[in-house]
Length: 236
Image (cartoon, rainbow, N blue to C red; front, top):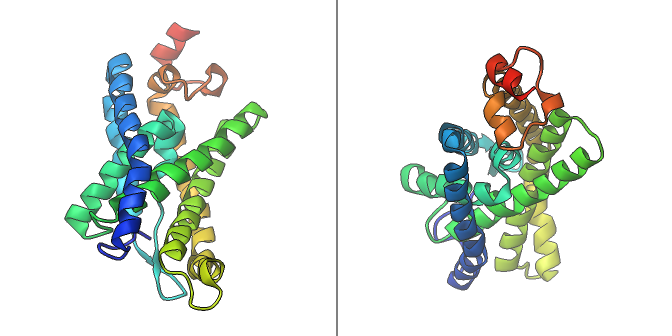
């Protein structure tokens, strides 16, 4: 979920904005660096941003009475790394707040921290560890998207529990309650998001392998025969 406009106490909204700001500012600088070093990466940046916008705008009713949605941050995190996704994800959340009333301006910092920062970094840590261990690209991408989705909801639950501790049991009791609201729906949703992300990556490998090689997302051995033949032959 996106935390709705005005839902957080002002002090919490400000604190999460301050916490998210350094990541977003650094991410903006990394976007500039990426475009300067790889001018042809612009369309791919736009594509991963659009993917996150569409995926995270899908609202699915939860069996607990709330609603859940994918985050779509795994794709951009895998290709461009978490700092870039922190900036792109924040832009996605800003446009959703302005155009779809999904989330809010006062809660933008909190939503950015959970969906554009915490989720991508946790997912990328798993992705990096799996790749270092010799796990294939697509399984690692699936794990990244799955973990990024789940961690987003864990952090959102933590944010809500901090803002609204239970009268009995305090923060811990409130955290368990908020986690329980999303757990039943979010686990299968995270699996679906992982599978969708893998499908998109497979398509990109076929049509944009040269750019993915330049960005360091692909290794030469990951490029299948016949994918982007002209550039692959130049790099062989």
